Image (cartoon, rainbow, N blue to C red; front, side, top):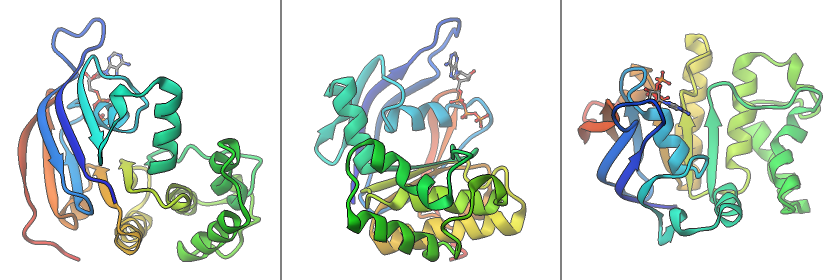
Length: 229
Ligand SMILES: Nc1ncnc2c1ncn2[C@@H]1O[C@H](COP(=O)(O)OP(=O)(O)OP(=O)(O)O)[C@@H](O)[C@H]1O
């Protein structure tokens, strides 16, 4: 499991008068479960992009464990993040024309980290998220099923942290609840840190801590006392 230390981070985009993100310091304990909330445009996706190495910061440090991903070259950062961070996105980022199993395995195959054990773990994870037909083509699946495939893919390489950006936003309430259950259960089972950007109040209440952003800054940060699970 990986803890996060972020310091002096500033992300600006051309045409914006103020930085999209300006965070002096943020620590997340390894193994904790954090909800990232805030109105549309407050900077949640931008924060996720820099935490996962998809976007570079103008200045600052982002340490996962003792690795400062800002100090890595682009290629090394991509490899490190691919191996250590499991990412679940609102619109799944799955590939039509491939089965559920092949979608789970694709990033690992592309990174050259494939092995028999990984193949067996992918099948196990699909069963664990409640999908019994690993060869089913992705385009024939419901949105809730697709998100479950994306969760299995995120967990495949036993990442130290799972980060999800609005994982329940495009799902109905039942499918959203299932996805929330799986993210919480599987991250607990694998002992990884979980960070979820969400507008979903029910999901937020089930986390340990809530960090609220407004205009790119942290305006509220506290423990969630009344957890539903
Ligand atoms: N590539 C970009 N170029 C210019 N501006 C950007 C870019 N990406 C984000 N922004 C701006 O940065 C700000 C924060 O956007 P961000 O997508 O992080 O918000 P968010 O909290 O995730 O919103 P939502 O809940 O709607 O997804 C917004 O003002 C947005 O327009």
